[in-house]
Every structure is written in structure tokens, then in C-alpha cells.
Image 1 (tube, helix red, strand yellow):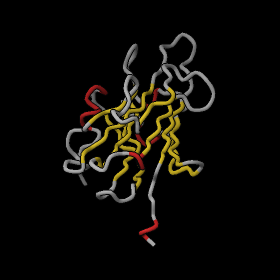
Image 2: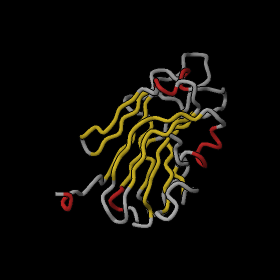
Image 3: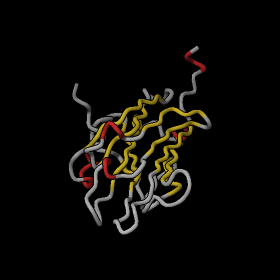
Length: 177
């Protein structure tokens, strides 16, 4: 039956949070995605998609970008069209970064954060960032494939406690046991 498995095709990653209390600096979370080549899936990303960019071929796009968490529902939404991604890419890692201006923040200071990852109407993962409260950024999803095979999903948050500027260069590094 594996020959009929199409794997993941089009995935949506969405993040929400409540606005900062009145008189406090706004909180800005940003989704980022890094694509890795098949010949170096844990090396430097081939490209990174974030609030001011999209993938060169349009397969990874940021559909909604909020700078303050105001509005209904999810504030940041990114779409990954994995079924259209060129075969030379074997891995995509998605993360969430907290902007550190005008105030330094970690997830513990973000009001009511939430994450949802889904394909169509099927929810693949949900989280509240409770396991990475001391982090300034976190990886939230990893998508991998072998050759031209189907895409697989691995959920789980992994916090990053350094300068968020460095996050995109390390978010796809191989995890140590």
C-alpha cells in the first residue's frame, strides 16, 4: 500500500497570540521556514522564507503577517506546497521567532500563544509553547522525504535561547541525542 501514499501535499502552519496589555510594547511573532538540499539536509539552508520574502518558486509563502497579535483567529499563517517543491529539496524546517524590538521577550511573556499545523481540515499538531517558555525562538515542524518520495511530518517544539538573529542558521542543525 506504500505505493499509493502521496504523503503530505499542502500544509498550513498558523500562529496566534493576544496583543500586549495597554501601555506595553507590542509582541511580534514571526514564522520562518528553511529549505535544505537533499545532498546536505542538516547543513546551511538553501533559502529561508520569512516576513519579507517567499521561496524562489512560490511553494512556501507567508499568507498573513501580524506585528502585534491583533485580530481574530491566527495572526501569522504560512503555506508550504510540499507537492510542488523541487526534488532537490529533501527537508523543510519551520520555526517561530519572537522579535526582540522594542523589548526583549521569551515565550513566557507572550500572552496566550498558540500553534496549529494542518493539511486541509486535518490537524497534524497543536501546541501552546509551554515546553519552551525560556526560548526566544523555537522550531515547530520538520518535513522530510527520501528522493522523490512522499513528505513526512515530525512535530515537536525545540527551543532556542540565543539571539533570534542566529536562529535561522541553526534551526535545521542535526539534533543531539
